[in-house]
Image (tube, rainbow, N blue to C red):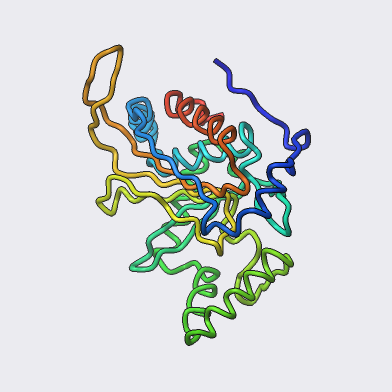
Length: 271
């Protein structure tokens, strides 16, 4: 079955509910929705093996990033939004971020226009970016790190809150600190599997102004029902945290439908 697509220019983003939600909820400290699901990973494992034979290193993180890019760009563009001044605004371009561990520090790596890139293009770009970070060649990332962290408490909190207001509410860019209103992209994918964790619910950090964060855990054998029989199959744990000012049940339902579709049909991520 073909997935429905939606043109952002034809969607009303500021529905009555969204306008009410921006007044009811503060930044994601209370208006959050969380969910968890185990997904059959066998089709993706087969695709990863095939792509590896062709010389491409593709991981579960790359697959989830590619899926999220298509979800936000084609199937649920309402999720590619943020709340500002009591209204919900569409971001326009789709930028998918992922958390990268560099030494003992966790940073983010962003892929711009991710919905227009194939899974192989996205994976190659992420792999190159991670290598650059770990080799210490990303001077822009070094420039961003360490500034606010060196400030004493409580000045750190006050300045951080002021900078957040400038960037997200007033939409003022601060080039010297590498700070802008798209620092974390459209959404964030974090993989906690390499940390030895089966699953965990990611946090919606108020500073990010993201509508959703997706976490994936370690692929492992899980009991699932297949053709009426309970069998042990490799499953990917997927958790999500959503900003209720931007997302509601209908959006998450369409999100889940597209997620299951692409996990079962990973070769469509080549398009």
